[in-house]
Image 1: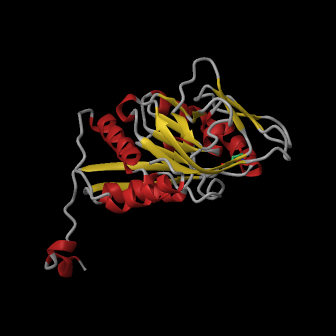
Image 2 (image 1 turned 180 degrees about the vertical axis):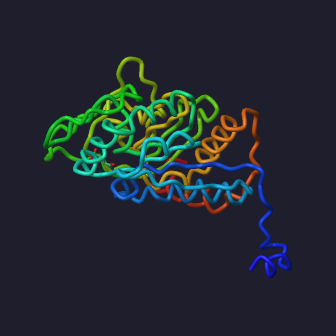
Length: 268
Ligand code: GLN
């Protein structure tokens, strides 16, 4: 195969000098809302730049030691039942490994149910309170099963981190939990259209260090490539301890998809 490839220059893989290891939390349990698309986008946007990637699925069977070398972490959304299963494994086995990664500045993207589990606690509408990892200063309460779920297209304007402040981001939300920032927790964004954290205070998501927690499914990254590149850039800078500027990519299709939702939300 390699012999054949060497005569087809456009297929020949230049061995890039950079690599990233991306940890994907519980893809078997926290993949209800199609958030796997975010992992595909991170991987593709690396491969297109000759950045070698390894995707490491983190399941209940994965030993915590496997998390030590992760450069970037992703966690998707889930229903209450799966969140309870995941929380047991997190708090028994993996909490300190994830906390130390985030505390040393590893970038992370947590969506919806994963965000709730990285907070202080999540009180589902049925069953017991789920203790979170306390990385995000948020608490989430799912008032009661009959209370309307917060569902629909959503547009937000990034407030933190500073380097993407002002970026307009679109997605789709679907959650029963209402999230409230606590003890100076910083919001990821402010809501332009949609519900956001709780449908009351116009905040969306939360950040801590280089970790972003958001309610935006979609999946988020295919239509918001700037967020993807922000995570990749930060992961490379932390790993190689030097400033990194990513080669620009043609995001015409991504922007067309984003504009279609902006138009549907009449935000022009
Ligand atoms: N089960 C949680 C809720 O309903 C999270 C849902 C999700 O991940 N989309 O709030």
